[in-house]
Image 1: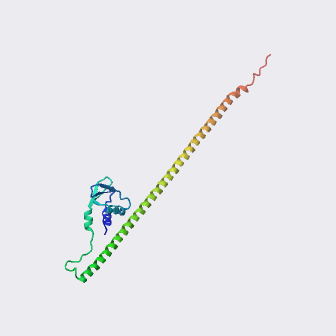
Image 2 (image 1 turned 135 degrees about the vertical axis):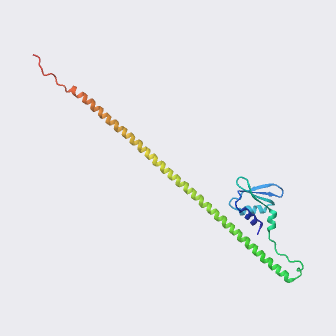
Image 3 (image 1 turned 30 degrees about the horizontal axis):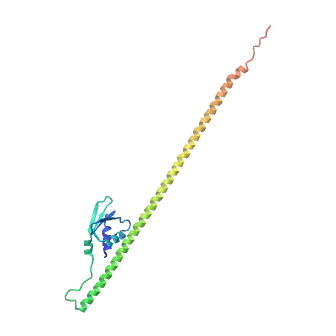
Length: 201
């Protein structure tokens, strides 16, 4: 398995890091954000002259660390011909055949692992995209419901204000009619009073 794949496997361990700090052989540290693709982050680290890899959480706390010397030590090497058999044609042929099988197996394993990680990352990206769309749809639905509620309250307030204004006008008209009737009733006896029937003798 390649160095980049081993680094990627280290980065994908739980809990996943929010920041990756790498220290080069010259002692200068660098920080990387894995983002969605841990494969690209691992390839970047593998391309640098890195001595130490540190995984940090969102608060900067160290989660785990790994030295590149241990990664290099885990690399599988091709089989070598045992001493004393270098001149044996059959031993050389078998060793060469074993190396070919070894390389084919290592390559197929690396490709399979890379495809599996790529598939998982795509599934993760799709899940995040679906969740984002659902959140936007829920937010839009909540805004629509809030707008409908506000509109209903506004219409109810307008109707209440209109009814209160109409009731006031009605009461005012009734009071005016009542007062007018009272005034007319008080003036009518004085206007229709008859004179005294006794004449002067």
